[in-house]
Length: 183
Image 1 (cartoon, rainbow, N blue to C red):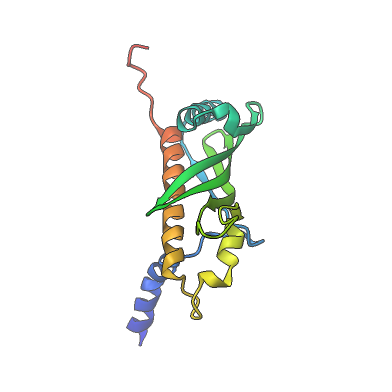
Image 2: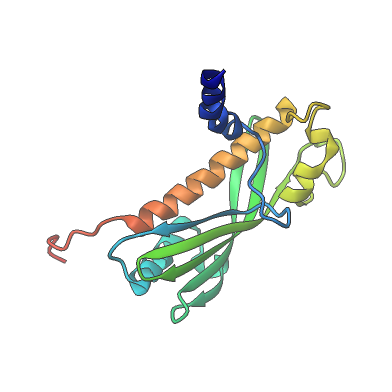
């Protein structure tokens, strides 16, 4: 009996990881957030790297960045990325907030909304829908609470896109710079 309980406890993280629901904060809002330690980097260096990341990641960093305070160590931007799901072209709108302190930074991705022509035969089908509204629809889930396969495709594509974005700025902010490169 003890072994069975220990086995179940050991496997619990695998069951929770396999869930198909986006992360939510205490108010129910979908939020991807983390404090990331980066040893040896100042607030100023992290801020500069983030500005460079915005400039190389988006077509126009000036159009994306809505708030930029070097003194406070904060950058907030509203971005759009594409999701390719079969024949369907979708856009994902989001707000990315970055806050910097010596040796660490915090990111939050919020205000996620999907836009695309889900059904070309329905007028207005390409309206922008918040992620909270999308995932709160009873049509998304089966009676047993499991996400329907059609919606799971959208969830997986959105989650992959968000993870790719997170990994991109994490890589840019934590990259080591060689001082002996002659520049």
